[in-house]
Picture 1: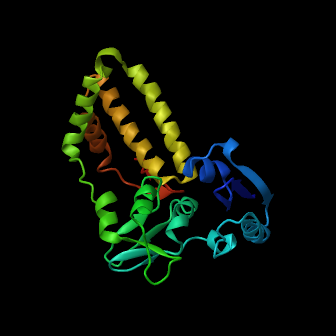
Picture 2: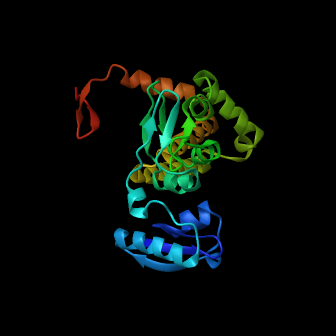
Picture 3: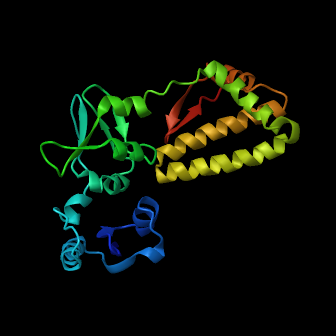
Length: 251
């Protein structure tokens, strides 16, 4: 369903998700806007948007909503990545294209996420060739989001344990509470996988590792010992893939 919404004195627009587009993205409470029309016909709602923008005296969109709705085509060059939308409408289009990925000629691999959208919107510039297009500098985007220094793996577990000690987890917690916490984290991971939400998948896997680190400590072991023990069991294991799962060879 497409909704034609009106923010009195501000604008008229179209969205498929009022809460995400108008409340979360633009900051307006449900009592601060109204729905003028709705339809499952994108052609009708696109024409109606222009009609009402004119009748209310608002700025009229240069392009019909239906032409903006399709998957956004980003044009990457050596220096920039260009979006087929003006800066004023960039945030909404990015929200509609969450998860969209592209690769620049230098090999940078980018993705539209809830974390990267604010940076893109803040740093986007209007194209000097077409005011209906906007762009960002690839190098700046890479440095802001892709070039974060990784924590050395051989130190991260001790960092987790120190974090847990500072918060009293080892003094007041126990194996059972951490096991329950692990169930919660793996449940969130399952939801993220089903929804194909890459950001949430990363978060859930990381959270699960933190919980496992604490669970191992409370059980009297270092997680490094547990990992090495498991790898010692599987490193020489043979078998084959069956329906996407590795099945060990039966001796």
